[in-house]
Length: 121
Image (cartoon, rainbow, N blue to C red):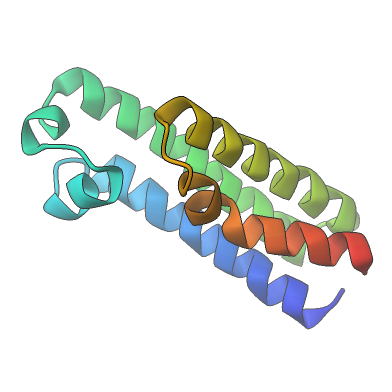
């Protein structure tokens, strides 16, 4: 596999570990509020914290899946294509449902690049 694809895939994994950190461990931090455009009152809502923590676990599992695909899987290309396609679809939905068109690039930008590189490799 192309080293560029490996490096960018690991960068996508790190991005999702960062999102997991914000959602699961730094739920009420000012950084989390800034990243997700939420007020301290919203972040201190117990229901929001529970939802964030659950979502954070999913994001962490995406990161683990990417690392597994890059370093351990015998079907690296196929697995990475599936994971990157999923990330792109989630980013598209996030952009649509939130009305923030930049989410597709913030959350899915690297995944789009990796997906494209995988298709041409």
